[in-house]
Image (cartoon, rainbow, N blue to C red):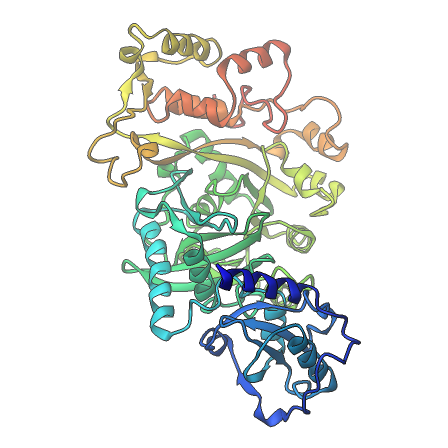
Length: 580
């Protein structure tokens, strides 16, 4: 108890450290810069003994000096000064050493270390505070790296699209979740992950990230990068995106299998009905203009786009600009352009675009329109007369031009409303597909008023053969219980539900785009909800999942009665272009 109280008192005296101008604390001899230690890289820093505990820059009010030197506390409670080579023996470093001793710190041996600029800034920002001190030996780092890769491999083997590592620095345990069949789930085998271990794991994993912003994993900033590695016999690229939240870093890893030539599924197996496939093929055969796919994050836009491009004849020259390349498309000349979070000007992207326009291609895949730079690229390419295929995040097919014309992307409305610019607009969603063990709805509703009411509600707005409707089996079967996740029992993969607009068939719609969507939507649109119900009557989807993705059938009935479209869903119950 006495030792603990002494520690508290010592900490209190340190918090009350005097200003930098006070030099009377003690009289230390001038430091010999040649005696300073050297920490050339992250590995050396993490191997330091005693290990780094925290930065003392804020406590001593010297944040402004972070680009030159930084006082730190080590695990044995001693202090040291990290500095650039040219400042390790400076007057400021000497003065800081006097203040550290005057505040009750014992100086480490060696008392000063030389670091490079990026490492020094990372230390000053306390990027290592929650991970340093535990990742010290090569064997330890190897074990942590192996644990990280085990998390990734589980996701690859079980066909997860994303791995989510949500660190809660306020709690002893944190979350490990996956996106499986569109659901955000936590496997039992990775529950109760120690927060400290997860932070160490991320710090070690970041060392292998390429194209990342930052020399070390920094939980206080947004970071992105990528890592390629073989998992379960497959070459997989991890697309790292971390976000600094209130409780700690949240890291999302998109799992992209590389060289997926053989795994590009045809449009039919994705869930597109024949009428919509016919519209897509017509768009492929016609020259000029853009085919734009929209949907939320993880809605399968890139997969559909790759499947569509793969149907182009061999006499068409296809060039792609992607961030990154996700599928290997036969016959296409594919280019990966990695753009960093902390950079506005992207010289590599502009250079690639200039070269692209001189490559005599007939078709261009522009991976995603997400900012002003890609918006300008879209205008340049679509205005040149080539066939353009791209994606954008939007809540409906009708909303695609509004999204592209937003201030964030900045494509001209007049350009979008020009006949020939937009050839086909597609919005899609992915819904969980029922396993063969699904229960016929007519059988399940016997004596169940809730299911009987659902059948009445859906039949009032979407007609079809009730004997084809099926419900999810919550107990599953041997085929759908393999992952051990009750949330996924009764499902087997996902399938598309889409809506389409063909602008050139509706000149009044182009005027509607030019006039910022004033007035009612002039194009009758049979929305994705209606397409989903067509599939439900064939036993593909559970009607409950359709309600969850869109809105209840009772709401659809009221909307039809009032002739009011659902905000952002483009009249989900009307007529779709190309469908009966």
